[in-house]
Length: 95
Image (cartoon, rainbow, N blue to C red):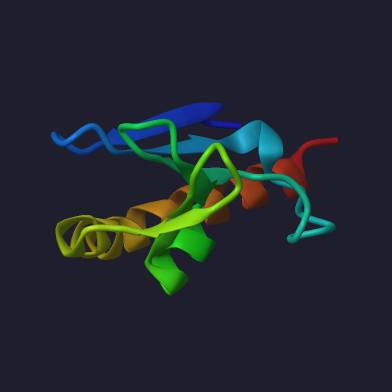
């Protein structure tokens, strides 16, 4: 594995945390390798937040993400995909 975790940060307190330890190549739906965290404790998986443009609150409800954050998530898409693909390949090649 090249990098176990990587964090992409936005100046408004949002971040994407990429965690190679959460990648399960044989079961792509398992684990949470790409998480989005908001400035007020919100969180969700990258692809759910990216596709739905909403994020979970600690009370179980959801809120719409700002358009600027939706654009930022879109700008990070290739980097998220590249990280996950590289880590999956590394894991497949490990004994």
